[in-house]
Image 1 (cartoon, one colour):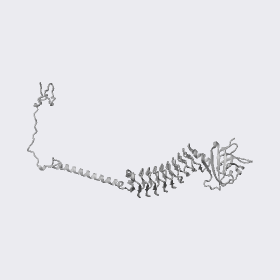
Image 2 (image 1 turned 30 degrees about the vertical axis):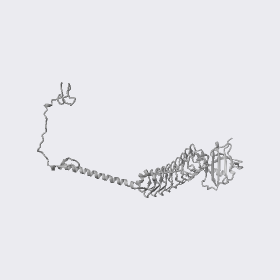
Image 3 (image 1 turned 180 degrees about the vertical axis):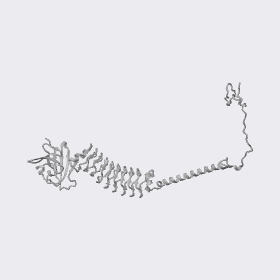
Length: 442
């Protein structure tokens, strides 16, 4: 039986011992043991060695070692200097933001433009009761004070020219704010949902009011708009509480739903520079009784006056022919029912003012206001773009066409609902009278 020469374990037919791993096929006796020779006479003096800092070992002295140590020291110095430089640079960058505002006893004071842009105070927004922005800052940044629920008043310097998008959005306790005289633009959603804001006076330099800028300001009952205003954005005054509003003559665009759901609005005059009333512009203004449309009106959008159930007078300063060129979309039945066509000088320069009530085909009624110096009614009718046509007979002038609509044999002519014994060419004009022309066809 074969045994392992190394450990004595039984090998059986195996070449390698399973116990110690000895390979029995190799005759290790053939290989002599190699012992390294050490020159014991070789030695280094103690001065050639130096201890390693923080350890028990030592390193050799000499030019090479010194060079390595110097290189390591330089690297460490560079790293240290670079770290200090980075810290100083970060301090210079962050200092305006950190030191550019203070919050004490609920009063937030903003001192720098940099702090305004970063608005780090939003993490403490629930502690802000009053905001003071110092002189030199030119804009209120987007969302700078949004959702400051306890904010009640804001003081802005005259250097501010722009109030950014959503700057005071959701400031539900905001009651008052002074708008600086150099302000030119109020961006979208600037005062959205400021439910306690009661009045606003826009400075003379404001040119644009962004979309939804004052939307859902449900207590906003007094608004003064400047003469230089040109654009009122969509939903700009959605759901506000004012009863009347004078739009400046320079306004050229009123956005969609600009005055939608202004339930307290009773009257408004739209300037002549507006040629399109956008969709939903006055939808839901259920207290609106009177509106003056622009002379250059070309289009009335979808449901612009839908829900204006109290509307009784909608004056269009032009002729019936001009009104026929106006495109109006569905959902404006309230406007059409209240339409008054004001022909002639809208300022009333004529010495006499008469009203014509024209009931045409299908029961459609139009009201025309004439300002005139004519003595007889026919003269006033003919001097206004040939409003009527007819034939002269032995009994007087019989009107057959009114606003290009023919009646057979003629239109019925009455005054204040009562028959008139004279024809239109023989009927003297009485100031303030109402004359009716009713379509009749045999």
